[in-house]
Image (cartoon, rainbow, N blue to C red; front, side, top):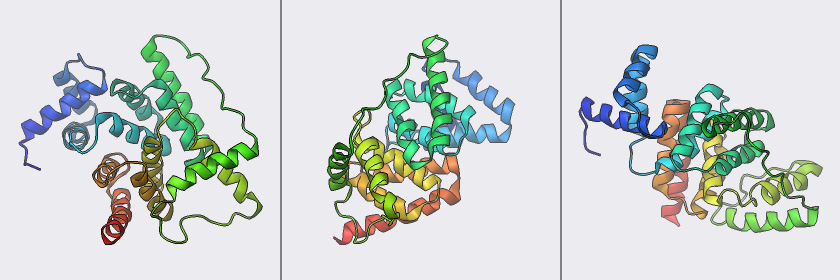
Length: 265
């Protein structure tokens, strides 16, 4: 990419600040307030996290918001999550899609973090809508085990394409079937979020949790679901700003392994 002056990066960062907040703000004032509050860290928030990372062309702002919401939910950063949920809505995610991120994270980051994130997200969306509380979302579709198993097989048929022998699975004893029916027959089979988006959510939480074996499996699954190598690279770049360089570097290592296997096939 072409080199930028500081002024160009600052303008790019202010543009992202504006879009995260829904437009129409005084972006100069917002940037100045960020620096007043955080000093040099605030400068880097505007110029690097927003001006460098968020303005890269390889991923839409809608998808970058999806990834950031997934990361912040995983690390339980609820103050930041509230702001980024509102940013995600402003970037084109629907309230249902935002809530579905938390549903997916129930299986991949654990119910306690998913519950905290869901509570925070719903409060943030209610604030945007000017109401005290949102109406309840519909409960999950009740499924018997036969239906859960059939739906799980459908999901796994796509997830498993081009995976190396052995995969990321583990023998959980008598609970293996129950776990698979829930993860693949219920979470992954829900229609409220596309499977490509679910893959981005899962890859974001797995790299944030430093789970390289499962991450490799789900990076390949993301490719199976229509994500590109460039988009997955952008996911890792986004991780730099929201979970740190060491975490992102490990994610890049896993992605390069998948990329090399793709090129060698």
